Length: 91
Ligand SMILES: [Zn+2]
Image: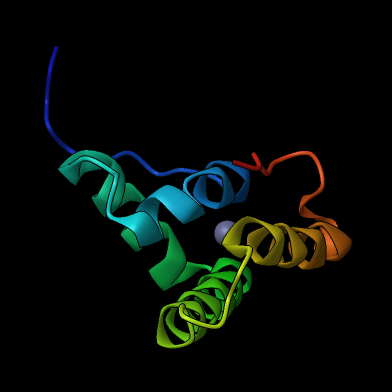
């Protein structure tokens, strides 16, 4: 069966998809799954807002940011301290 409907996902999956979501790299179904989860889950909503704020700050100051990868890693570390240590994939 190949229904193109979103399935409920857990926090681990939502966080794993966080950066892809913000980068616009998710397909429509996965995008809907993450969106639906974040709308229901206060914890993931907070993380999403944090990451989104970070990314907009990053793009606003891109000329000054020599090493975006290091900055992203710093944000990932912050998320890990909040209990997502085993779920994040650092790119
Ligand atoms: Zn969640």
